[in-house]
Each structure stands twice: as structure tokens, then as C-alpha cells.
Image 1 (cartoon, rainbow, N blue to C red):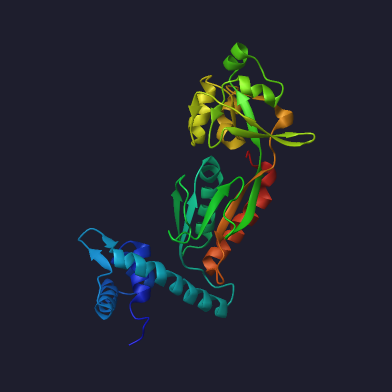
Image 2: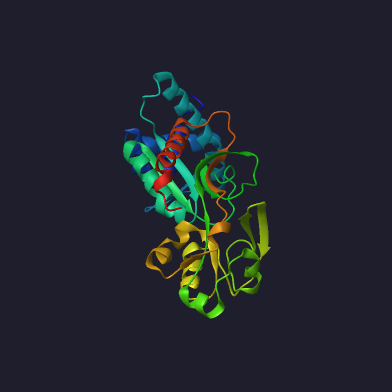
Length: 297
């Protein structure tokens, strides 16, 4: 009996969501997968999966065992693929953490194209604005915007992005059009993640502290407030695109926009990155490099 017996079956059941789906993915019978996992549980003396007629879920012990074993299985898959060459079909699940209009508008379709090209790859995208620990929560990589704080992660640039200042025509008629960022201190400003807005001056960057009647970390909600005339928005162009294109939002302070922001793909600093993850990362970097000039970011 090998220490590997039942391990890959268990990991595949979790990845696929059921015994039948795992069996289909592995090319074996459902009863075989069930027997292998049951034998693994008996050998370990713990219950890894809680079974019901409709679904399968991990126990607490199973979640911890999966977290550790999934990396081992991925490493074995990578070793097999490297030996047979880079032309081998890549397989397995890729978990991605992403949030925001850019990820919804551009990253998701790009990953869909990657999945179309690699039919044995399964993409799991979690759109969540909270701060995610990639390693502890089992994500392969994340899409992040702005200035990166976590130096333990490897970061590759996907695209540069510009912060756009704008307001509705009604707001500008009522309160006037600022011609210099310092004037924003006297205006209603719509806040996202910070009340310190960075602008580019000929002699370098400056931060202006602003305030206003609206705060939201959601791009569409911020754009809606700007269209309704609640104040001035300063956000990546992709969040404001519909309003700018329709004329419901008017650009202001163009000479001072911060054009030095970027969107990054970040991932843990692992010695052996699973081949499917490395291929997905390389695909995304190449995808956005080729389309940089055409993206409304």
C-alpha cells in the first residue's frame, strides 16, 4: 500500500465537488473513487469528507488535509508534465482572487479564453473586496490594483492605469469647475478607499486631503453617485466609462491625473509553481501586454 493511495482521489473530489465528477475527471468509476477515499480515511483514522445524498463537504480535518495535500498533488502533476514536456495538456483547478470593474470587464474574459484553450483546467474566481491571504486560503494568484504592500508576494504588472477626475454637468454648473487640485478641499468629493488623493504636478506628486458625502469601495456605486451630482469622483477610468461615454460625467483636472497606477497579478513565492498556474500567469501577462493600447483602463 502506497502513502499516495486515495490522496489524489480525495483532492479531486474536493476540486470537482462530488464523487461522480471526480470519477469522470480521473477516468474511473464512482465506486472506485469512493473506495479509495474511504480506505484513506480508515488508514488515517479520521473523517475527511461529510457525505450526503446531494453534496460532499470537507470536515475541519479534511480542509486542513486538503490544504497540505493539494500542493503535493500539484507538485506531482507538475513533475509529470515537465518530464513529458511543455506540450503536455495541463490539468487541475486554478483559484483566483479578484475584485473590481477591471477584473470583471477584462480579467474574467481573459481567463475564460485560457480555459477554452485548456479543457482540463478548471478556473475558480472569487470576486471579493476583502484582504485575502493567498496561502492560508488556498488561492493560486490574485489580481490587485495600486501600490502593493505585501513584499512576500511575487508581482507581475498586467497593465498601467490612470485615475480620472470627473463630475456631472449639473454639479459643475452649481459648484464651479476646479482648475487645480488644491481647490478640491472646498468641493464635495466621493471617496473610495482613501481621503488622500494623489495628483501629478510638474515638480512631482502631491496628496490632497478631501472630504464629501459619499464613500464606497464599489466602482459602480461611486460612478452612480457622481452621475447623480453628489460630488467629484477620482477613480480608474474603467469604473467611470459609461458615464464618460454618455456625457453624464465630464473630465476635469486632466493635467494633474495620476497616470502611474498599475494592475498586478500577485502570487506566493513558491519554489515550485504548478505548471497550470505558471501557464495561466504567463498567459495573462502576455494577453494584457498585447492589448494595452486598446484597453479603457
